[in-house]
Image (spheres, rainbow, N blue to C red):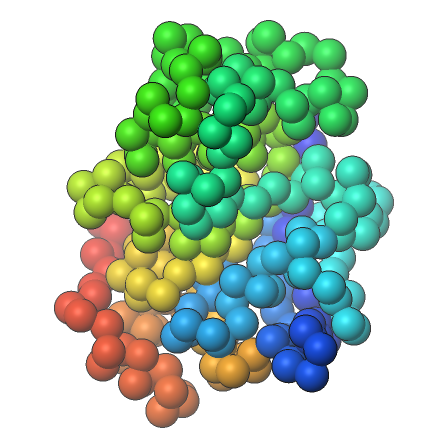
Length: 257
């Protein structure tokens, strides 16, 4: 279990440009410690670019990204920030180095951050994602898609962050495996008291895993609403309604009282 205090994230006026193209325009939102927050929109809406800017992988032209709930402030891209904020990418086939064993993939971030208890952390991380020690010395090509994504999640968890950025973490997986990985993520969030920021084009996935969500279009925020309001079709903006109509039979199962 992480010894860090639960953290959230506050984004204010975030703007990301590539040459003359504005990918994200003045986007602001706040994610509370322990909350699961979704970002949805059509392809090209800027939702994945937001995540990349949060972890320092996309150039931030302006705006601020601040951790909330902690005693210190760290900048995206710094080592201290990455200890607290880790990302799980969309494609497990591309995010793992094909010539490195699982053991080396998990040990690398520990070495970068100078963390000494690598053996114990690797064993714990594999256990938490439902894989045994027999997977430690396998290569990515020896794993199924679901197993690869579990390794990617273990790699993100091994630094014991408080915030996970999830960029369509199940879209490259078969439907049955998607459910397993989503259930794993929700279990990890509850046990570790993690904060999630999840990007997806799938409204069913977001409304299942997230309490609130932000709708984006052409780099801008359309509206922010609760998942239960989306499910009940209590939306303010025509674009959000068009996303609902385009989604094929999405629905949120209400938790038992």
